[in-house]
View 1 (spheres, rainbow, N blue to C red):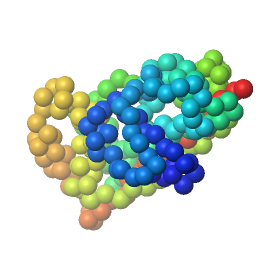
View 2: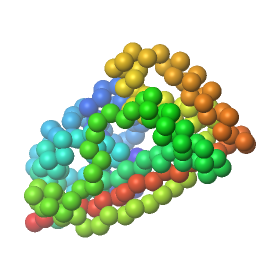
View 3: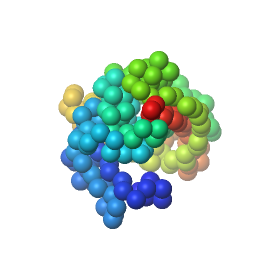
View 4: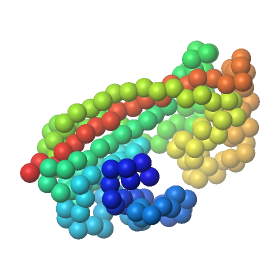
Length: 201
């Protein structure tokens, strides 16, 4: 929706029909079920491609080739991520619990989180113009933090692949994090990178 401020036409894609069904509907925005590696658009269809919190799941070489194909010459692709650092400002013990209990019990699925390289981009007719590193803070109650952790891929994998009961997981999360909150809310650190790539003519 934010892209409507700078674009007359916005197209969102996702491989999940369920996710697309939940997407906000608004004039000027449409959604297409498609993978990032096989975009159903003609060559040079777009002036801007954005990727939010998803590149680490893609076959990067195939996606970069597709991104270059559907971009008009000299136009832009922007990749941005926002990850949870597993740190709580008010209680440093949270970081240890997050690392030694939470991630041990629910390890992250395999993914490619390596930053894009100049050579990787150049191979696909793209130029890495700039990379910005940023950090931000998010306030959670214990219940909200548990709800957020329930959305992470390591927990959803435990439910979908291992058959764990979501209510049991949530109960364990709440019981684990409540003692770390001395106040109703805590402050947690997030952050990531924004990468600006330009299609080379």
